[in-house]
Length: 144
Length: 111
Image 1 (cartoon, rainbow over the protein chains, first blue to last red):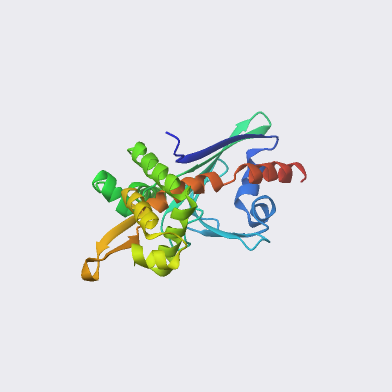
Image 2: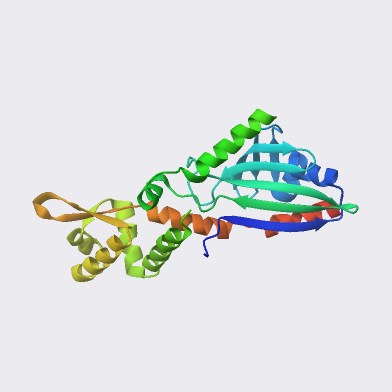
């Protein structure tokens, strides 16, 4: 069972959830620790772009926004062409821990199957993660 | 989801790619399009017999598909689907969260 569908990290930070939230969801924050520069349209369905001095660029779509507790977005799978529709889902969860914050990052969806392989292997009865993420986004859109 | 099927696909792709001759054959099909074993033997420094053997193995792994061509000459074309499964495995390994999270800790610490 070595095929990783998700990456999970937990981090103890000596700062309030509000401070951590600012670092995760503002252009200033994202452009400091994540990219070298960033823009963000902070609303569900809004886009964010991060660029690096190496010339790399990443664009993500905000999917979940519950300040200052949950921030989720979808973005491209590394190594696939930019126009490939498949995405992984990244979710940051901030929990107060004393004066600080426990930050959990989960990125999931690496094991989603290309449609043709999926059809071959499983009879094509499910569209997998692409659908699920779409449903999640629709569900969250309806809630907000 | 039947994860072992993904495993089996990734296993076959990485086994196929571990051999430099098979990498050359796949690269030739990727860059030049469908070709017969004879075409490939003319373009690569490998005997036709060796190419035929490797093409059989690549077909078993689902990485190339044999299709009948003119005068019953079998042409082989690339099937990228298994490659994409392996690529997703590599994507998970290449996504580096530890570097950015250390940077986040540093960023918060210095402000």
